[in-house]
Amino acid sequence: MNKRYILKVVVYFALITTTSYGTTYKQIIRSISSTPAIKSAKLMQSASKELFKATQGANYPTLDAHIKAIWLGDTPMAYSHTTAGVIPMVVGSKRKYEGSLTLQYPIFSGFAISAKIEQAKYKEQIARLKVIDLQRNLILKVSELYSSIKAMKDILLAQYQARIALIGALKKATKMYQNGLISPSELYNIKAKSYEIDALIAQTKKQIAQMLNTLSYLSGKKIKNISGRLYSPPLPKISTLINQAYHYRADLRIIQSKLKITQAQITLAKSNLYPHIGVQASIKYQGDTPKLNGDGFSNANHNYLGLDMSWNLFNATKDLHTIEASKFQHLATASKLLDYRRYIANNIKNTKLDLDTFYIQLKSMNMRVKAQKEYYKLIKGRFNNKLSSADELSRAIANLAKAKAQVASIKAQISSYKIRLWLLSGVENFKRHLKL
Image (cartoon, rainbow, N blue to C red):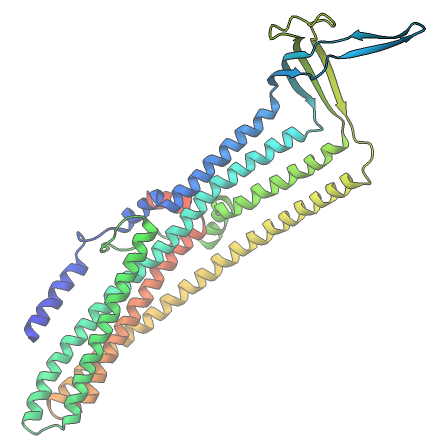
């Protein structure tokens, strides 16, 4: 049975280390663009684009057709009071039809129309930037999961290696027990460690399966396994990453667009201080039949050309307060933009410090693995010569597996943080360097 177990470990090791089995990191990143979350964001972008085009329509004249039919209950009458008495006169028909074709065009709106178009343009830009920022966040989560799965596979391999070592130790301990060289407690202790490793293996397999499920959800495709390393281009200087973030980060550019919207809102609020002027031209006919050829009382042709102007002269300083409120909103957004730039720079600097610390920790843990390997060899030799207990041997095996797991975890953190630094400078920058 032990031989079959070792063969199973060898087969599994071949599967998790091959480069042709599973989905690569680049394949997963490319699939993100077709996920339902990205599709939803792109549809919202399309909606914003159409709203922008609709707002632009206010710059053009409108043409409206209007038809009206009225049936009066009584014939319209006028009464003339004379010395001879009241004389009734018919002044209209009981039926009245009107038809018109009216052209309207706003000549001047106090720059309100141009301000609304400006706001719609930047709202459409925000919707487009949200798609880019969502991609960045999804790639960041996918990268963290990918590196975690790689680490868990290394941990699983270390646990399998510990299980094989415990099998060998258990065989040796069983023979020693049968010869009366060790107590039953020492034999049972090795068996207990063996079951403990089995439980850890089951736990690690479960975590890998859960991470693969989450990775499948985030990438929009079924992923049964991953292959290949988590590649990231060489990192430039921190100052370069910060400058690239100022240029490429979509979430920062969203705030910049919001700043433009608040500026347009000031213009829109000021528009109420100006008169609004429009022109109308209408081809209009009326009559007592649908032919619109008159009713015998007034002319059929009611065509006209008109100029309309409205100007609010007083509204209890409402407009002035609205303008001031718009200015404060603009200043608040400008302050938020400045703060967010500082936040991005601080985040990049702290992430680089974390990465540097991980490299130092990796050196330390690599030395610990070497020390644990030598200690395991020492304890194994002493156990074979009856100089160490079975408990010492099982602990040496477990500590070696633990040290290997810590190395795998730190390596995953290093890979993840290198990707994180690139993404903190903007997803477009990251894709360009990764040639996606």
